[in-house]
Length: 473
Image 1: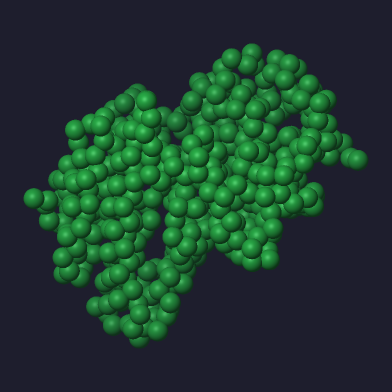
Image 2 (image 1 turned 135 degrees about the horizontal axis):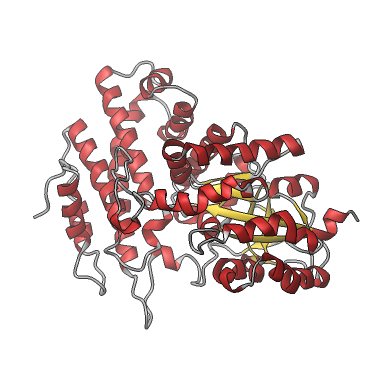
């Protein structure tokens, strides 16, 4: 048995920020609570993303970035972006196979809650975005909120993804003391997907108690060394939110630096990446996945799907908000189908290819003309608007929309703004009245914690962004 088989360690960070700002331009603007920085993205870049990139942490860990965040870095923090992309390129060059970065769903959507066609779009758009940033096809894929079901895994396998990672408690029949894998999940369609099992207890210590661990050296000596001796075979996987290092806990990018450059090796570990370990250790043992599970404590997808009520929380507004967003998306989809069906092409295949074509350098006009050469000029102009609206409706379902307990918070407001904007621009382009359902649906979106309803938030969005959608009664 080789040394890496006995002592492998991978640190994984998922980096993401909620989408917000202007629904069309994407401009975030000033957020006073982030002072002395312009906004939260700027602040977190200065205390976390850039420091981690500057000291080389991305060269030594596996990581993923939500598309909204890495695109913001590309546009607004190019030095950080360049170092992150270069870290992956260097990892590829050094290993000759695989890198440090993983792909993720394009709009950070909780995939098991999405319609089948939306899952496929989110996966394909996410893979295309990854290839645009890193110049290669991904091997692994981060599932937002680690939310999983077999259908999602089957779609990932169909799209060419090789592995994902989950918490250990999301997997059944895990071998005892065999480490993080990778393991094999056999899928109903005959394919299989590899999965790494996060080392949960150690990952939780990093996530929630890093300030109290006494530094990387002390933690390695007191915790990681005994853990290695107790279970010396296979891989240890520490997976957490990337913002742990510098944002959630100030200065702890230094903990990560010392962990991955010195202390883990001193404790008997050999650093590796998920890509490299997967390629050199193909999965042989089969495990089963807990359907519709996440990293969270609530059973199933309750925390994001319907919300829940207990002595301390009442988030049941999430179910009614989701229904309102679903109806808005369906109204847009219906208009889209009416435009595409006479063209003799599957509308959802056309949608799947839209953003990958733009990433490849085509304009919307060029893509539409290439795929629909007989479309009339008027219909092409309408279709461009509808495709923009569809991008907005996909953005509504970002996991952050349903993460906060409070209805009257930035992310539910942003989702409602996306819905109203999408309906408004399609209404302007087609002349159709699309105002009949959203105000009614949002009127019943309410929370005991606030007097504001979804309808109030809709009116605020219409005023703030000067939307053409008719004002609610």
